[in-house]
Image 1: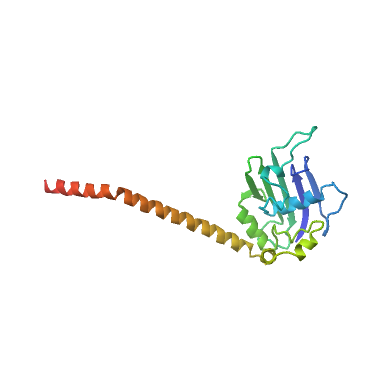
Image 2: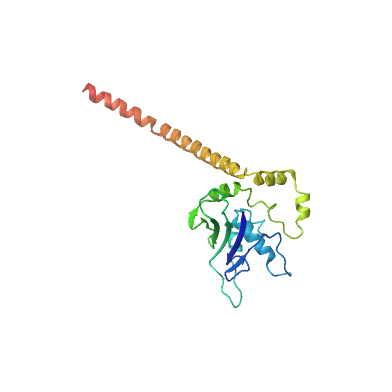
Amino acid sequence: MLLKRLEISGFKSFAKPITLEFPTKITAVVGPNGSGKSNVADAVRWVLGEQSLKHLRGKKGEDLIFSGTPRIARLAKASVSLAFDNKDKLFPVEFGEVIMSRRVYRDGVNDYVLNGSQVRLKDIIELLSKVGLGASQHHIIAQGDSDRILYASSKERKSMIEESLGLKIFELKKNEASRKLEAAENNIKQVESLKREIQPHLKYLEVQAEKMKSA
């Protein structure tokens, strides 16, 4: 599997669309202060499904969209795409090139796209888990992050290991099942409440029905 290119448009400091081509394997992104290295790393982490805005150095989704300058108007959305060479079929899909994209709008809505088709976050995480990739910060080490990994808490280490082993999708499915179970329990409570509410009316109707039969 080879990362082929990264496409960024409107994400943080990138007002104009840019494409970074990777004809060979890379291990680091370097450059002078203020050149956008951290924003490149954030873009990769974000398109891989990162949900914590704190890890992306923001407070709300709107913070990820180019906010404008005196010369350039602010943008309405941001998008990032990652393209992987899939000739060896490490990703279990038929595409020779896998392109994952994510978009965010100023109202906070997120879209996930896989090779031109809109998908769910769950689909992206499940596909990435097949190759041991994900949004966990152990995949992307920013400047000065070595100490963070060395001194990570047991919970943080557990999350890193689970994601590298492709177990993140099961956590997502567990959370989804818990939400569905909670919704089902709430529906049952509502049904029980309605039954108690209409019970007196049913008894009255039964009495009236018996009277009609006797008449």
